[in-house]
Length: 201
Image (cartoon, rainbow, N blue to C red; front, side, top):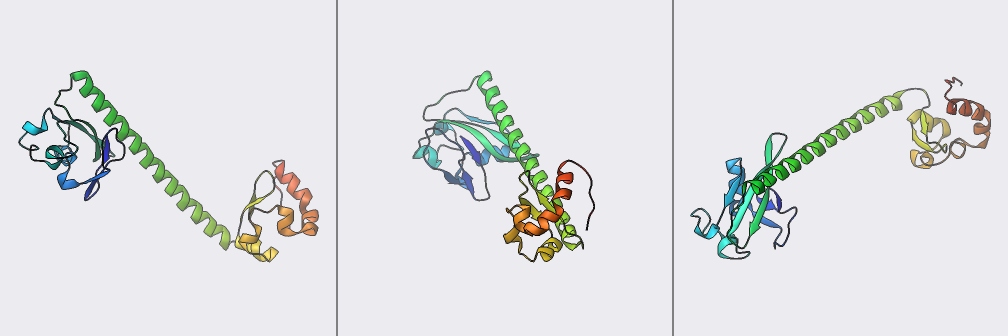
């Protein structure tokens, strides 16, 4: 069971043979793991003073064995990897090591995703800034794909063709600027496609 802990609920993100998807944090076993900032192993919860009266022990799902390892993402414990059983038992050293390694792997994956999201957010901010600059320039700027379909145009381009952005994006250059204008500039367009730097009015 993988449990991300939110402010008031312990949500069950992944589980096997366990009913329920969320538990109030104050009533959750995993809150103790977060508080300990380390592993927790309960051999028989019914005989453990801290948990013998816990609703998950006295009622459904009738927890007896419980083991958990904190999942750490970017230096903070964000959840835990839990192993739960209806029968009392003990983990051996190999099983404890596996629990630690899996929790570490999950934390590493979460950190990687967080870093990727940060990079994507910065890319979006940068792209937005660039487009704001392009929109303010007194020259027509447009991007096209390999099929000459418009993927971006600035405000000056829109004023030149007399269209809204919604009327241009996704259309071919010829459709966007009209056959006559396209015929006049097709030679320049072909040279650009061949990698040449071209200037024209």
